[in-house]
Image (cartoon, rainbow, N blue to C red; front, side, top):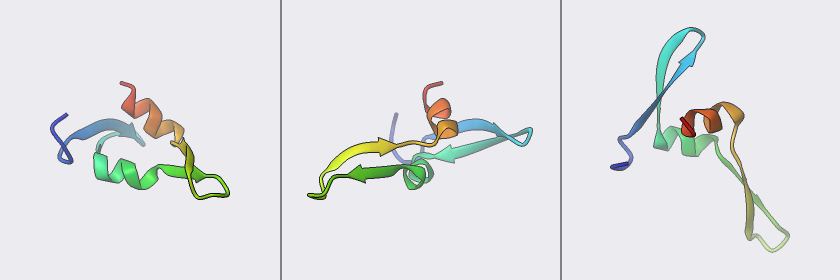
Length: 53
């Protein structure tokens, strides 16, 4: 990939749509422990399926 301008295409309500890396980052949630260290990442299923294509 070349950077933030890359787009991923997906179908939403029967329409072809696209999502940028920046938009995907906004949907991802990080899990932290009591010390504030990142221990995991939550990625919505639709986003995960889009990324693994």
